[in-house]
Image 1 (cartoon, rainbow over the protein chains, first blue to last red):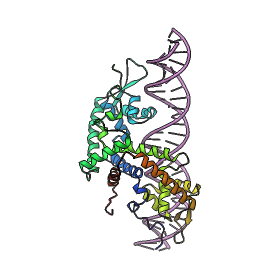
Image 2: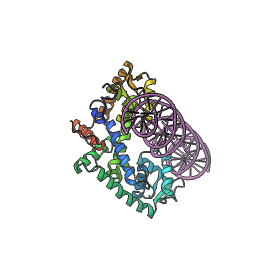
Image 3: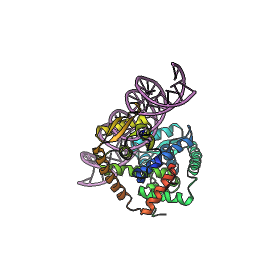
Length: 157
Length: 157
DNA sequence: GCGATATCGTTACAGTGGTAAACAGTTTAA
DNA sequence: TTAAACTGTTTACCACTGTAACGATATCGC
């Protein structure tokens, strides 16, 4: 009758403190999406960060590692392993740049472009399925609010 | 003129691929909030996970570690260090339960309750400031959509 | 030109946050 | 009573990130 923890059944039964915090809900939602992302891409799939790096490389050929790190919001030291992995898959190449011998431009290979297209479709499908209960309008609203938090104003859109 | 990476100026200049993905925006927004949380609580503040554990313990006195881990969505092995930390601060105590010698109920100390109240105020202030540009309605919408992703239906609200 | 300063990619290391497997002690069910 | 399940814990990992340093190179001030 008085077993400890009996009053706490499910996470949703906590309407007071944590559940009203944006940060808490943001983290929990992020974990859900992240797990579904991994499961959807399977064991052959890249992690979200590596997929992001590949995507930005395909969309910005000959981008510098430093510039890519800035776009991803991580340190350039952290990007080295990511680029190593992608280069190991043969998805991109580090190429010397004539004008500046410090930098190495990242160029996607044809296989990298193909893999990117393939995985992008899988990622879109994963999001479509995961957010199936959300209307397009809700999804747009969510994206707008998340960008607002990020400080990415949609003043140009 | 043809410096690599020149085409990629800011993260917001990438309206095509990544920026339209909920997962990507969710992660970036989460990082922003997480960093502000740490900065707002200062060096004496608890991490978000430890704060969450303390909050749930205060709101559910005599909760079991296993039950708390379930509520937090983490493994109970991972909760041990968190409870150790909180017990080290004198914020809660592990207490033996008469009926079941396996479990140890978590009970917040008066200092733990005071610390929780103090830090909750700081966290509320942090969120109020960080989301100042969002209307109350927008915040409510954001919370609702995040809970939807979490699978936490607000059928009771 | 030359020296100071800055940038690039890289390495090594530490810290955080989380999982998985095993374990002894205990309780519950067959 | 034996088998199964649960609790807290330790230990070992793994993914991700930041910091600090480094050599090589570029750039700026003079």
